[in-house]
Length: 156
Ligand SMILES: [Zn+2]
Image (cartoon, rainbow, N blue to C red; front, side):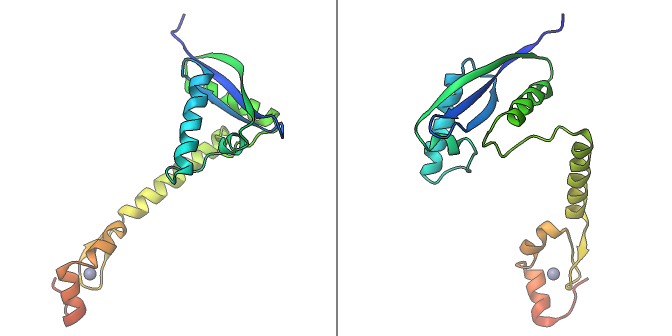
């Protein structure tokens, strides 16, 4: 038998609205995971970190955390699939739904690759320097470029 890992699919349900947040964790208990959600929520309220959809439940202060399923898995994507199934079946606040459609995943890769390539295509600046777009802002502050702006004479 192949070695497997275990994950827990859980939900945090708001007692007032019955809306829920679905998540998956490999932490030993869902209480551990709730603690880390709360820590993130606290930091967010102090102006640190990004907004997470779980906060929509936590901010009511009236919620319960429930275990939905213990999952034994080899590949993490198996957990994502089950998590997605619960997200689709519940009235939940999750916004970061993972893409499971293979076509869309492939496309996302292609788009990422295109953006990566676009960033590495070098452009010739008016001063004659050859620069990648991501370094253009920095280049415009260099002596070489500034000298060109003053003298309007390319140096190479
Ligand atoms: Zn330049």
